[in-house]
Length: 450
Ligand SMILES: [Zn+2]
Image 1 (cartoon, helix red, strand yellow):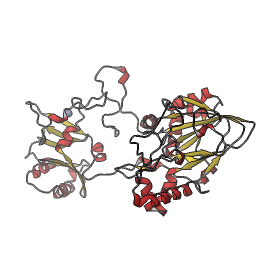
Image 2 (cartoon, rainbow, N blue to C red):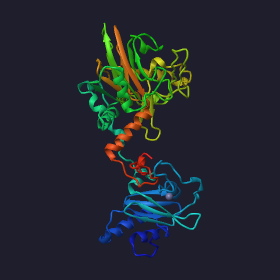
Image 3 (cartoon, rainbow, N blue to C red):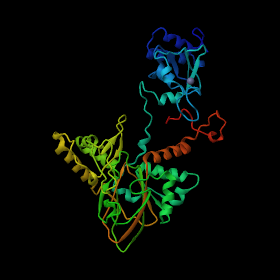
Image 4 (cartoon, rainbow, N blue to C red):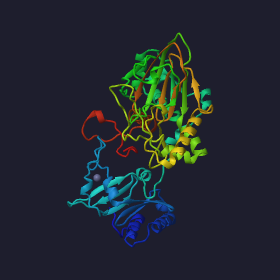
């Protein structure tokens, strides 16, 4: 450990902190110093500490500050963070609120911080540079958003809809499964072709993604137009574009459909509409109506069965367009006008505007530019992101057998994350702590999701 007075540039900078020079000036001085001594030219960020914060200087114009208490709380050494379970071990509430480093130091591996402890020995924390940078909050340094992979679409998607072959999706090494989920993530839906037209094969395909979510319609469901479940889905009526489960607090994330057979009749084309695409048009053309759809909660119910009465919690429901509170990004579309309950909580002054908003939304949803119609045939499974893409169908006659499944949004997202980790980033091996082979390969404690 270097002490003040040692002839290393970074140590001099650390000493400068004690002279109350501002972080920015110190940062600039540090870089000038490095430039004037090419021998020391290094890409290591320059660090300094004061009573409350540690500053990391990425470049003369760019630095991040981290509160001492925040850094100590986020130590991921084996005593502070369980490397296998990825759970916090440090007792946050035993950290002195005014804790400050004994020493900070730039190393090739990251920022090293030496902390005082209640005992005589010191505690050393090491934070990788990339981790500090991606978790910078003062100021926030935004990484390239992964959700920017989303491709919005209208009716022209019929020229080349996202499709994968059953053999590929079922492939043993999971690469095909990853491709399938990536297509669903990008487009909000994907066809799987060449699936044996049986409930068993469809159920097997669904379970590739994760646990099937059991609901009032069953686990793996199969329906004909017999009104077996007190829902219009079980009739031959046309169904407008909607998302499922608006009456749930947590609507299912994915749904899979498979038309197994259609005999003695015709009709029953499938309709898909990209809710994110329509929302983007709404935002562009009618920002004030878009904002009503994003803020007015809509109550809903599923009450066709005497033994069940589903309503979201809170019962006032959720807006049509749900956004991430932090990034303001659109996260979820909920829309089923048929399942809507009494709008008893509307602000009297916005009743007419709200009806105007849903009328405009409906008009855009049902425009030729938005609607993608497809006649499904046995052997093709349709997987839909129920938080984004609305589905519907035209009326039909004859006998139609459809089977399918719901998969919870967390289930689907977990599988997608694991596969992305596997195929995009690779797993980082961790030293063994508990001698168990089961954890021979595991994710890093610095994984961006933790
Ligand atoms: Zn620690």
